Image 1 (cartoon, rainbow, N blue to C red):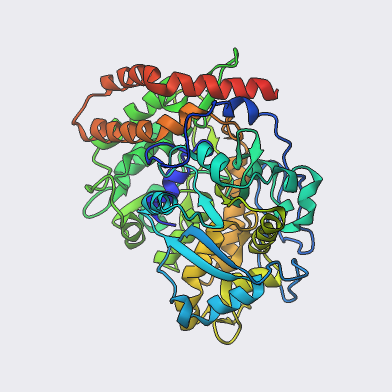
Image 2 (image 1 turned 60 degrees about the vertical axis):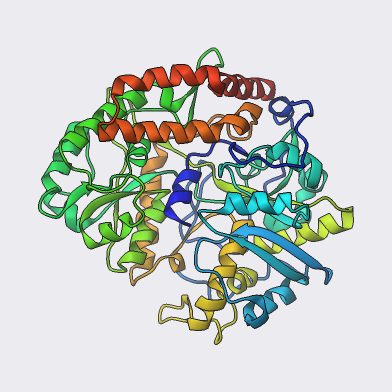
Length: 543
């Protein structure tokens, strides 16, 4: 997943956002999403137990860990789900596009495994919102439609009601057991697919833990590592490692604010007050303190002198010219730097206490959206649910190995440690298509050694698992996940963009910190207060 999108996905709040208009879906209906969404019965949770992890997960959010690749894979889907018909799929890929279907042997095998003739419309980042809107405007809705949580797509509720299948009766409660791989998703996953009191699609599970700093240990060695116990110590360490052609931090200031606001005790997107009201995290004293501290970092000259939207920060971090970069989760913090340098084990910073407050690590949503199904008769909808059930095959299953790696000897081989490794053909034919299939839906996240690059894969799993244990001590959830706000879908995209621009302007010196509070006072009348009231109403009704 690209840097721009995976970090923005970490800031999402609930299904849908606002910017791009979807025409032809209707928008005049009564808006009752926030009330209805509080009452839906979520699918039963039945975890997959045929493959036992080396490091156990827990109900609080700790990931399962697998230190090696299973020698004996199990079957998770007993029969081909498709009926031989043609299906279309709109999804997004986060890597190079695959070889076209006509000359892609893997794609043809996917058709055979799924029992369908699959056409995949592959969007890219940036650009998925335009691809999405153009596809909808064309009037021929795909059978499977990936809906991201915050890529600027407006009127999602109207689109779902007008064009998509309400799958609540097929997956609510124990009904989901007909699709065991979908049943292995937690209620927290399913909450993100609830709109207007109905379940609209299969979630796309994602790491539960949120944004963190990853540090190049070679850079931070002179400061005894990136870990700190206070803002003063962190600032001192940043100064110590900055010099010559090395700067402590990347210049993507809004992500710096997201991570460091956890240290100052800022809420995870929304604070639920004692009277039940909600406060947006950027409109808090804790976030303002964070910005004030970032100005001190800026004055000290510890930020790399680059663009706040720079795309090559990870490369520069691996090369040693940037000391630390922000990543969407601890898993990505270790994994993405391994891709840049297989021998570099990034150190992951645990939030320190600042401003007299306890740190709050911010859990991620747990998904990157969900995939809806086009309206059709029950037989058709159930068939497509079966296809989604196959795509959600868990680690350790034959289906998951095939989806991710293709056919042994052609698309992948096993390395000396028994891990699958794509061949040249696999990279050309499998990698891009699997990226799109995995965006449609996938199994609940786990720390898997084969997901890392390099020779220390098992150690990477242990290290990230240990960091998750530490983060769990202070981790807090976003209280509005699983709740719906019409105002949020309408205003969030513009509000977020304007706030990011203002952060960049303040830190860069183009505007003053004193302009931050008035900005939010103005936004309260432009939609923020309405978002808060609608989310609070939904929470109250579900209590």
